[in-house]
Length: 307
Length: 236
Ligand SMILES: Nc1ncnc2c1ncn2[C@@H]1O[C@H](COP(=O)(O)OP(=O)(O)OP(=O)(O)O)[C@@H](O)[C@H]1O
Ligand SMILES: [Mg+2]
Image (cartoon, rainbow over all chains, first blue to last red; front, top):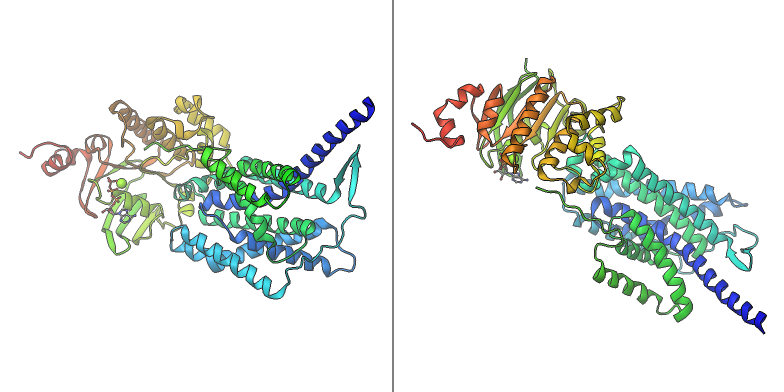
């Protein structure tokens, strides 16, 4: 009797652990999206909705790159190629849309409008050529899970987690520990004063867009592996990134990452307990709650210059 | 030949012209002051030199036309301490100083920072503090110190005494004197005409976008028009 009670107890713990692990893996994907979103917000103070369209486009690029080969290349090759595509794509968008906004010193609302338009255009074009049925990335692993004790862990999720964490750490290092990262933070605070430091503010902005583009590329491939590739993939997932970056405190990268993991975990548990139908509503409710209770977000760093 | 020669400079904001052909020289190793009342165009002039505003006319530095993009201008050693200090709130004091050294190629940034902490001990005590939490006076010190980090040939200060208590204002002017003694050329923009005329070697008076007077500090201090308009003394 005691032994069977214990094992059912053990069973329960395992289940919660499993949910936690899945939540962390989901959070890692959200974190990548949220950071791509937040990095643009931190500097230009606008929500870059083009990010969703870019993710979809990059997911397709990654898919077709993989599909060109009889035996699929290693996933990291595809990720690097797609990240580069994302950069080129971002530079292209900068050239056709953002550059003239910068040149005319137009208000940032124009960035927002441009990015929204771009996102709609990209998604519409993709919808013309591709069906809503997800295209599956070729299988990367022969078996889908491995076991840790009695827990089953998805190999795919683990790969996504590792890649995301490596990229996030590299990005945080770049921003917080390097000279160019310091320049990025300065431009985020005040582009004109940054110019007086000898920083080429426009170049920094282009770099920020490129980083966001490469993040869209990586996110596209990882999401494609997890969910399949379809035109609305980016838009759907970007909502999560957006929510995470709001909860994290718009523009704060650390906050966005923390919030993304939190969101992933909450979502997993909620879906398990209450079903997936109410999950999207729940995520927005969490966001609204945060906006009521702590509008400055998790990071909550508000400093004012004294004049 | 002066270190900086500004000739017939025109600057407009949209359709409104704010500078109508201003000319001035800044001699090497000297303090040159630019005084004028609110809205005269002082900040406009200094921002045009820094490349933040487009201008027509010629700006010659060290015998060569000054580049037009601000980051190139900084590389030439023309550095501005902007009006209202504009320190980077949210970054630490030390990060602000490191940003000052952004354009310095090679050189020992750490040693330069240490030197600044010797000149401004209060900044050293607060090096890991958010610069936005400094007092107004400390922020002004930081703004000047940050500018010195870029090893300026010409240091332009826009109203460094603005909003500071008289005792701190004295400190600021003493620092400016020291900077000159170290061999750095200074262009000082001020509304505090009394003090700036006292420390400057040469002075220009800007009114409504035109240079209306120039002369040594001594000359202008004894000029009846100047004393009535800027020094608050009655015309005799
Ligand atoms: N961004 C702007 N857009 C339009 N007009 C401007 C702008 N900045 C300044 N001006 C105008 O240009 C003129 C000169 O302004 P400027 O800031 O150069 O004066 P200032 O001498 O620095 O004054 P203060 O001592 O108050 O700082 C003013 O009439 C001002 O209204
Ligand atoms: Mg001014």
